[in-house]
Image 1 (cartoon, rainbow, N blue to C red):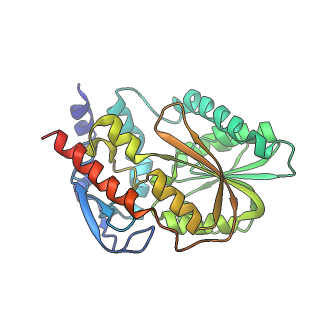
Image 2 (image 1 turned 90 degrees about the horizontal axis):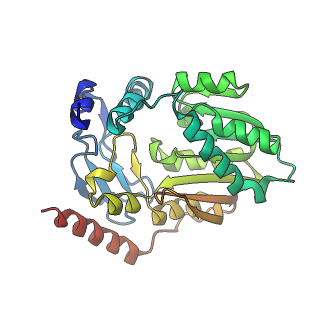
Length: 300
């Protein structure tokens, strides 16, 4: 069975899911859209738009929170398994996540080791592999929030405090010294709202770690914009849009890191005064749209 047949065999009717049209850009608030693709990498009829003002790309319309809850509980892992041609679930990801956790702990060690930090929140923390690594390595009390009950259950078995749900709906009472958003921000339903919330949860001398799948790296590698868009990524974020997000929501970048896969870019940040007027440079936005057109027309 080839990839397209394996995905079709899942019987997932993306077109029939409940969706919401986004009225304004999640980053800058503009409502000037450029429609760039009408199909995602899985072959689903997903429309992606880019903001003409800042270049942020997002699914529009995007599935509702209820649709995404069902998607992550029932469809996500089978879908990525069908796409990659191998089983990917809460059991098989342990080895891959272990390597990633060790790498990210090394990345953060200069900022955490020897500090007085006491707790760690991993947003979208899946089976808790990263949380467990940080807890052990830096003697932190770890908490994981994730929308997939089966994956959160694995984290709980590791002795990690878990919350099942979306961070956008969560109303915690604690503050945290270290907050991580690992391989998750692209999946969020509301990046701006989440960053605002996380900024309020981090102690003023704390740290925030986030990484993105750089959308530009993805479409350049695949020589296809459609191949870089996927229904599990509400937002397709670039370095320019991520760095504007961070500045606007009160995070100062201390360090950047290009991962070994050449797709992910990680940032370690400190809380700072928000700069809500920061935007990607207009010349970068123009170059971004020109680049997308070159990629699209190269296939004609």
